[in-house]
Every structure is written in structure tokens, then in C-alpha cells.
Amino acid sequence: MTIKIINRSNHELPHYETIASAGMDLRASLSEPRTLKPLERTIVGTGLFMELPVGYEAQVRPRSGLAAKKGITVLNAPGTIDADYRGEVGVILVNLSNEEFTINNGERIAQMVIAKHERAEWQEVTELTETDRGEGGFGSTGTK
Image (tube, rainbow, N blue to C red; front, side):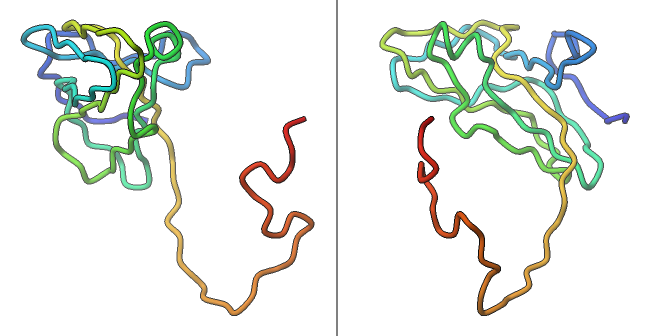
């Protein structure tokens, strides 16, 4: 699949690091470093603008290393970029650690996965098919 993209950052385009990678790293496009205090959030621009084909979305997800080592994650994970959006790809980062974290220009801040999706049509009914699980949710199947 080919996706049209405008790169207004001074960084390379997102790319797959390995043959089996699902996501591509997104880099911060900043004129100066930005520091996030504990529990603070911010939208970080990437300098990227794209045109996805209808029927596809781009999902913005946390980078596991930043989350595990620094407590930095994507607040609305996964964030969705719709096919008709033409603005700059932004990443909502939040600092869940107890320490300040500085985001530098070019830093890999999130990953993006391109995914196909379906559009649903609702069929209103008066009852649903019964299953063994029924209404059990939120841990009802146990922890082991």
C-alpha cells in the first residue's frame, strides 16, 4: 500500500525497523526541547501530514521502552487518525512518572500502525443470542 505524506519535519519518514514490525516510530518535531512534569500532558507535533485510503486508519500507540523505563505513554492509546484528517499528526503524551521528562527534537515518542477497519450498520433487536459467558465482564473469567 502507498500512502501520500508531507514531511515538514527535519527527520526521516517513519519506517519499519524489521521485516515483521507492525509499527513505525514517530519522532517529535520541536523547535526546542519540551519538559513534562509528573502527571502533565502535552500534544507533540511530528511534522507529518498524510492522506490515508478510505477504509484505513493510523493508530498511534505508546513505545514500550518509554513507558516501561520512563513512565511516558500516549494518553488516548491508541489514538486514531482517520482517512479524512489532513492536519498534522500529533501525539498526546503524558508523564506518569514521579520525575520530569524532557522531549527532544527527533526523539522517538510513539509508534504508528496502519490498520484496515470496517464500517458497521446497526440492526436493532429485542434480544441477543445467549452465550456461556452471558453478561460476565470486567474480570468475570478469573485471573488464572
